[in-house]
Length: 430
Image (tube, rainbow, N blue to C red):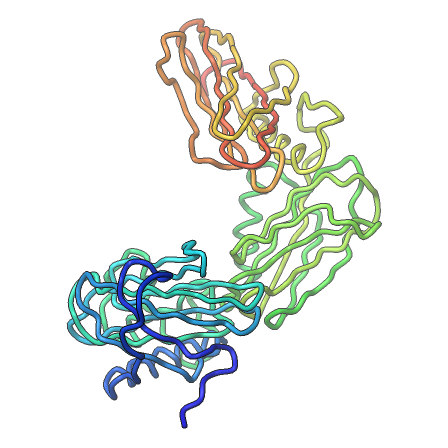
């Protein structure tokens, strides 16, 4: 008698657009020998990335444009990856996953026949996987992976296909021949990242640490920080690290900053309120291997007009605007202004610019995640410059040829809607 993994309950395939209302039309079958061999090759590639492909595999026939829905009951809290693999005749498969309420959790609709989605559940849950043969007809199998990487390993070589998507990634041999010489180590990644901060004006403090971590483990390092100063703590993972989290605790063990984004390059900016040893906690959320971090400091002599009540990550980000201005020999014009508005709305700031001078207008968001747009408009409404990349800091430069009255607009796209706005000036075109 065939048994299922303890992680998953038995699944069923259905047809239709809604995973909640479609009737079950048949039970999934085991893949054919030819497709099973393709699935085995892919499973081995995932094992090389320290993921755990599950034994249970299901297959069904996909017809172009007709969705099939697979219902999966996850028995315990965990992260799972799902990969569809098609046979000849299926050139493009789309795969998405939704919860019992119908909310879509992840989707892969790139142009290939091996889509991959990843989802994490905090409690036992029912998931609906929707497979569509976007181009072609044929048999498709589904592979389930525990401890899945954030992005799939290179699959085109394992499947003997050519990359058809710009996001398919390079073809990288994963044979056990030692460290891939084309892959950067954690220290090399860190050096590149900190070089950008040094170029901005940060100064190294000589506090660089390295180590190794297995999946799910945390490393703690004590570093001395001083109240009234601002710092950047940059981390980096090595080749087999998919997601590295960074948290900073103060001398009183209270959290003062964190970066828990889904990447292996965490960065925390902070201006601590207490002097003393701070704990830098690095957690290997996904993957395993090398880690490194370095502590950098904002110079004490950077010109700024920030009030003392601008603190924490807001002050650190605002000082980065001052660093950007200082390296262009620009000085502050007036005091920094604290602003706030509901998400999606903009705040106008009237400015006067003089001919032959250059200006920087910038805003820094007050929290993680904070997203801002900044643009400069003339009196006739014409846009003279814009930074609409929805980042935590946004800046516009302008060097008018004549005296000019204009308006700087700061639009809040995320976070609580609060920010710090600053203007800087340089005497002469640059």
